[in-house]
Length: 387
Image 1 (tube, rainbow, N blue to C red):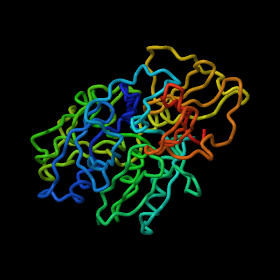
Image 2: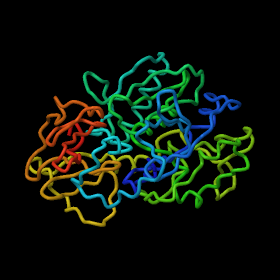
Image 3: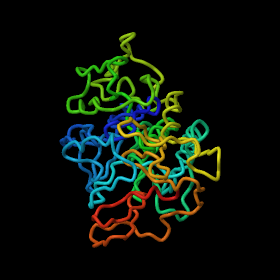
Image 4: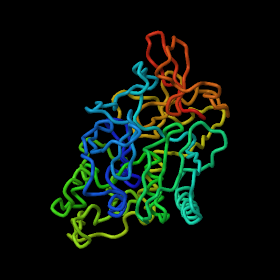
């Protein structure tokens, strides 16, 4: 889904921001993986899109430069969330609540663990690329409970990195090779924002051709195409920051794995800078919060319409409340006719603990979202923390 082509994950209301699932670059995975001892990839589902992953040491899953936590993937498709109604209650097991979350207030909160001076400089360039061109902002952590930890890996490479998808409480990570440049880091930040890879859009075959005969055996799964995503921008973006390089996972550097169908030749421009379509897609997922009437947060917002297709970032009015669509749920912003108070609704609320027995009325924080347990023993989404 693309940044550029910004994919809404239709069936999951998840943005595939033209960033669909695959790899950062041919170098990224090649330098970080021992091909002779590569673990066997297994098929899982991110929502209802198939991904091929290998297990990590902490119980999560790795797919090239993307790190998924255990609860983000399932063995079978989770089905469509297209018609989910605002304020809908979810299953009592919060681990099934969502597979990706937006960052509250369009702000990525980060903590630097260990980075060399060059990586720090390149990181600032990458953040500036996003913040000067989109509505996304960055803030170094003080005491926030939701943040991404940015650290340096042991890989001595310029094209390797790995990131979790979306906002993941305090467990989000962004791992960078020692010599990673700003473009590679900008790509990884795209994953942190919740975006996947571009070349697996369902309409990709109209723009590029995957040369499977040139792909290294065992890596074909990185080019799996989605069949269910709904585009939020009309045009596939071959220059997206989230697009694969033309030689990604190639048998050798002289044989492209992706070619432009117009020329039947490798293309240029992918992963170099945030493209115009990346900007358009990102701003639709992370829209400006400017409201024409500060005394009524619902001013200018239409009522929710059952059966209508909505994109991540869309706002609606439902039963007198303002809601905004996250990647897989509607977050309640506040009551119409009022202003949003500049307080964190999650302040003082403990994180969800699956080993705790909860009773109706209890509140918990899970994946940076506030939930209340109802009398029907189902969790009600009360909205993202910080909003």
